[in-house]
Length: 111
Image: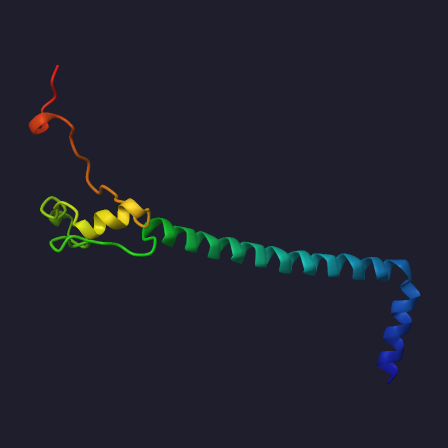
């Protein structure tokens, strides 16, 4: 009981200095908690946006394509099926070209 009485006397005896310290420390703790929440929220938003950008709602891949073997990219191409063309036409899918193509006949540049 003596310790509590002595601590209370020290807190009230310091007056304004005590309440200023209490205010500054509580403000600092609130700002630290807010910044941690803000940073974690940004991190989660970044992960979600990255997943949406990379994969969207899913991927349609050619049967011969192996994402872990870069040598299969050249051999894994075909015209889109009518089902995929219909989905693209309705705006529910976006075709993405993985490798660059050439608009020149037989890959030649004409001058």
